[in-house]
Image 1 (cartoon, rainbow, N blue to C red):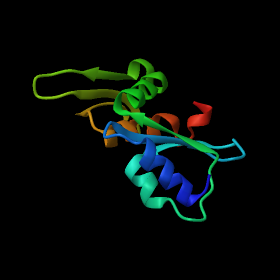
Image 2: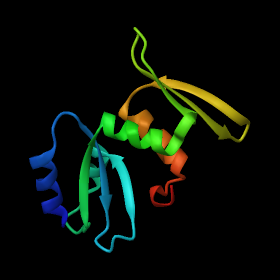
Image 3: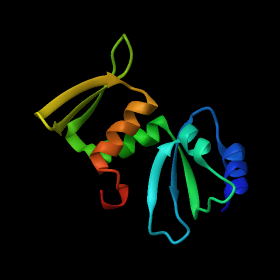
Image 4: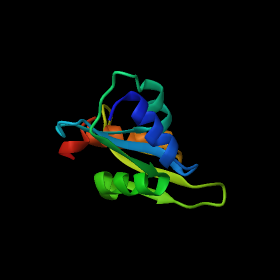
Length: 120
């Protein structure tokens, strides 16, 4: 799948609910997750991938839960949904509470996987 085909595939399959993309190289030796907007911004005509899967917030939330385990909790409040994330930082163990947004899910996922979702 090359640049133009990638864009066509995303346009044909994407709905308003899709915020993320899981993609892999054709050699199937590399897998990554990205925000859909960022993925499309960086897709070029010469880019070649093996395939992709579009993900919704709920599907990405499930991936974050799988990777983060008990360190990640999803909180429903009247003021809006939030994520409570306990993780190791340079200063020791820290707890972050942030809004339930695609960007927050992606940040947590990237930190939890150390940028390498294959080994996670």
